[in-house]
Length: 260
Image (cartoon, rainbow, N blue to C red):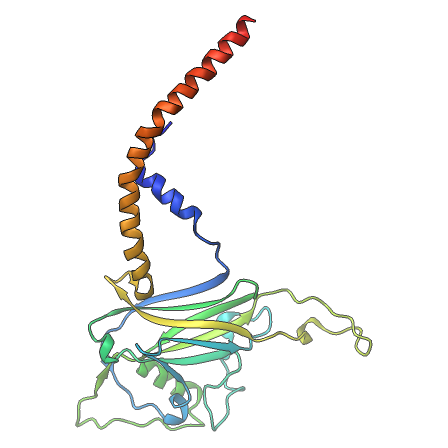
């Protein structure tokens, strides 16, 4: 009856204590290699929020693109951008990942985690850009609106680990038609979609796999699992005579019922 591994039994008991997930999550793990730094225009990156070791978590609300829009097609044209604020689109968010932070200088692997309520039907796309990639994007999509600074070839370009996260969101729910007295035949595309609220967290990975926020949990579970693995065999040994006696009593009762 108690043939299962004590450690497996302990893990099963702990899983029963876990709460069900109440949020959707998009995760992207990456390595922060050194790359050439580019002097990007302040008019562009100056308005982007930065995440670092002391401020690695932020909350946002972004208006999703209309239902059915392919994720890679969101904000691809420069129709919604303006000359005073290039790369501005209501369905996307740009965030600076300041990996040059001194507290993160000894870490190479990081994770960017985006979570939103499971009750909100939305799909997210997270893409990481190097400074050069952002410069190329500006040059290709906004060349008529902005002039990119060029480095001096006589001096070596500085290096950086900074990356830029581009987050795009699209509505993933099927809108329910609403009949209004003044507009009885309101098209589905005109249905009002609320902004999607989400949390973005940037943190280092220990040993390249373990997020920093999960380290306390692992440190707590390890001694608990160890203690459970040591206690379960003793508990099994204590209960085994009672189980055997109960099994024998049931067999005797079944035998007596057959004789009667």
